[in-house]
Length: 376
Image (cartoon, rainbow, N blue to C red; front, top):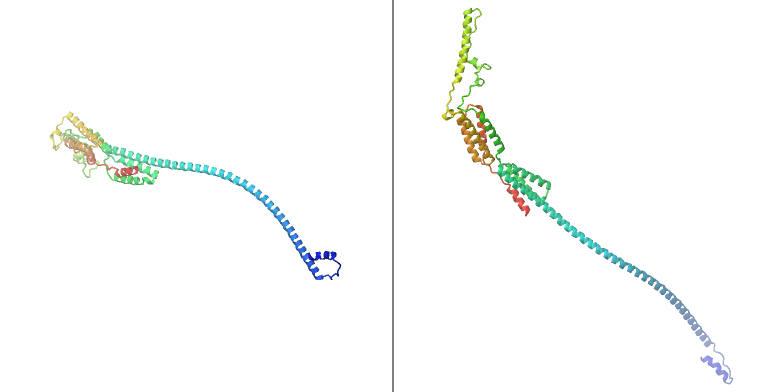
């Protein structure tokens, strides 16, 4: 500014001698102007560059804002889809929960039903076995035989083996114990005894009585040693001497008459000996019975045997023993003890009398106790 005002002052002022120019100051000012201009150019360039950068930043910001807006829209759409999917999933989960709860309820009901059916089946098996055992006990008490109990216990063992339920293993072991215990007891076979009594009653009409003289059988006679196959009549007759071939007619006639006389005397002796029989009779009334009394004797003996049979069937062994003793006494008193049929009949009667005794059939108490324990 001072340099600019200087010439004007020089014009208006009177002409004075012009001082010589100062070169150093002008150069400095030019340098300053150049620096300022350079700085201005620099600042302009920087401003322009900043403007460009700002414009690029604005463009980038706008682009990013658009991208962010697009991403936000996409995210919003995806969020809406996710919400819808979440609602669908929640609905499906709720449906699955409901189905699962229903399945769990059905499973629980099915398990309860299976347990009920299993328990009911076990109870049915236990009830059937107990009922069959009680019926078998009644039959054994009526018949006096262990066969009904043995059969019922075997059927129960087979049924428990097929059923194969661990809960009923104790019952099966009790059944096996009772079965072995009942088998070990020897009981009266009433059917066999009644058959023997029927056979005795059938033979009563064929037994010989002491009051009836029985003819001596020729075949029943004992043969002496060395005479096998020789008739009894010939044994009673002494053998005659052989006739001499050179004897006369008188010897021949006499020899023939002697032989005939010997045969006739032998026949007469045999017949006479058959008319007489010597027997020791301990009870005279047995030998002095009339024919009608013999008939009633046989019938009374049959009635005794029939009463003994009925007593055996009704399990009244004391009554049966009394009737059998009476029948045995009648056989020994009124019938001929030399008869082989009487010996056979007496032996049958003794067998029946020895086997007809009261035997208590064991009760299946172990099995009944095990069944009661399982039923609780």
